[in-house]
Image (cartoon, rainbow, N blue to C red; front, side, top):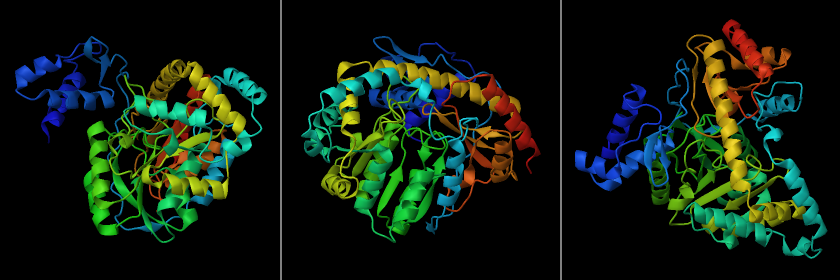
Length: 472
């Protein structure tokens, strides 16, 4: 264990035993350095790690404090890290995914299985006004000028946010896409050929598995911790064994686990992949939905070779119906741009103009703060509902951002059967097997807490818990 990890573990243990309580101020970096005889960098790394885990928070010009919001006693324990098989596998999940997504369209179904947050959480009226304004000022020549890579004003606004996050990305290196899924698929297509192998998390985002399935690629699922993300030792072994064409990861608030890689781990990840010359497709659609004091560091920030293909979107945090995303593909930017031109050509001009106008006028960060507050409260409510209603022995992740948590029912449970029973009661869930190329995680499910908590949701969790208790 490294020095900063040992220090972080000691502080986290003090918090867990309530020797340090919510709101308590931690010793300053200088005080820790003097007491322990370590470098300031060691203390900062420990504090950054604890901040990423949501244990402490930074207050400007004041110092570090134990995070005030702590879940009540009785929260369910966390799942263990996954240990998937090390062999490559062909992917066959699309039929199951389409079946689950079809039920999510029904508004009468409680949307625990949905992939989307509630549209009621977004500034739709403001965006409608921006869209109307964009239509009035639309330049007819923009239908040509704003072909891939996309509208210049929007790319400049996105580049500005990269700069604020410490990742120097030029507007010229950004390609606007129809949502993040097109960005991710174009990046994957740019660096792979049919028959290639791609490394993914375990469990993995089902749309990543679908993309591999569509392109005839093999998946290698790599061991993943529900709190800290992919195991880098397992990743190193997989790189040596499989010589993959790419690695597709969610480094912040991974879907479905909600895991978050610490900054130094992201740096090590980029360095490791760089030594093997393997592109990293960084799926970062949930990065703005953090519950801590600051946005998680991007893996893109540590990219020195142009191998990190960072993908983002406004769909999960601002404008779900606009379907505007982007890619910052590094050295592969021109290849991705050409693929964009040869597939969908361009994105809707009014949507691009409306988002550029909204970002330029300010208010985005205020909206994000309100959205994060709502999601954090909804996460707490769902975790407590799991503790109250689900069978004894159930485990659940404690995501520090995003709007998904992963629940692991006792061994022997069948969440495919549970899904069918729940649908009969008007409740949707996302069963674990849709997140694995091998249909693993049969006793697990993903739950969406992205909708305002109310009596209906609480009652649905109680019903789901009863069904799970009866489900062998």
